[in-house]
View 1 (tube, rainbow, N blue to C red):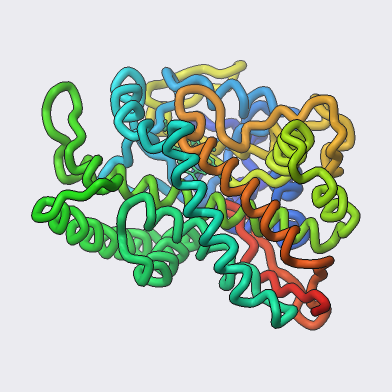
View 2: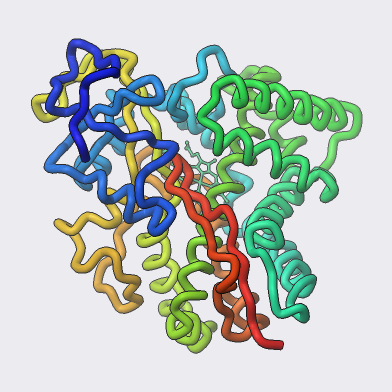
Length: 404
Ligand code: HEM
């Protein structure tokens, strides 16, 4: 990373030699290899400072990413998005710190028990097949529009008991929120989302149903009912947490498999073998991480000789851990036979992904149904894919072709 200081405001407590020019909404090299681009921010570390997007620290070693993810005492989750949006509703449990965090997390965990995930999984498989069959016979699709978002969004709507027709409206809202660094855009999108959720909650007040929206409407914290803001924050989190993450991950692995038909062929032969499929998923999760997480300093704190101040934002890029050459040989390669595939793609510590079981189910269903129905597939030579290294890495377009 280049060192720069001129033209940027760098707080007095940040040493000039730790300042680097990194725009987390435009990481160089992200189009070629989004995760590799994040990993390339690795330094001898453990911390660098970017003056962009309001200014923030970046954890730049695998050890630092791992340690800080697990240190909720000093590295608060009150704000997980950079730049931070003041005065917005906190999303529970992801933006709550211990000790309150545990109670908020407990509220949503009934949605992610193995029975609940199995039940949702049956509907997810039917949806997956339906979406693939819409384009299978044409020998082509634009994976992002035709599948990647429709699949997890359809599952979210089923979980919440919301109408399928809302799929594209919600997709558009979330997309603009996640990809724009513009605070005004984010605030406007959030207001629209709140109005949508308010309407859904009002409907459940009148007509309670057996769905997650009604469950959250009836949630309590320390014996009192959730406030409207707590309900909205929880629903917004379930939408955000399960949408761009799953869509992004499925897109990156499909992009990979289009370029490595030998890997697609290998996975086809392993379907039905629990251990082999688990290892496949683990290695893909290690290599194609999505989330780069924000934290805020709750108090002044010195970390390995670097002074951080209360209110400083800190970015934790998960690929710096997953692809750390100190920990793992040839980290860029996808290797289904690796001895260790340890990763922090689902985070680590108290905020470890609550929906990981559901996410794994969605990944498994996708691999099984896609590879069973779509023969060897390839990139469209006339329309190359476009990926970006963002706070949540995304593939923007992924046109695919296969013979019919
Ligand atoms: C491949 C897909 C997914 C990835 C890569 C992923 C990744 C993550 C990560 C890294 C965190 C930790 C955030 C932090 O430390 O600040 C997290 C938290 C969370 N995820 Fe996921 N996630 C995925 C799918 C899902 C799904 C399908 C759901 C369900 C709707 C979900 C629900 C949650 C929730 C509720 C939290 C907050 C947990 C807490 O704060 O205690 N995620 N996820």
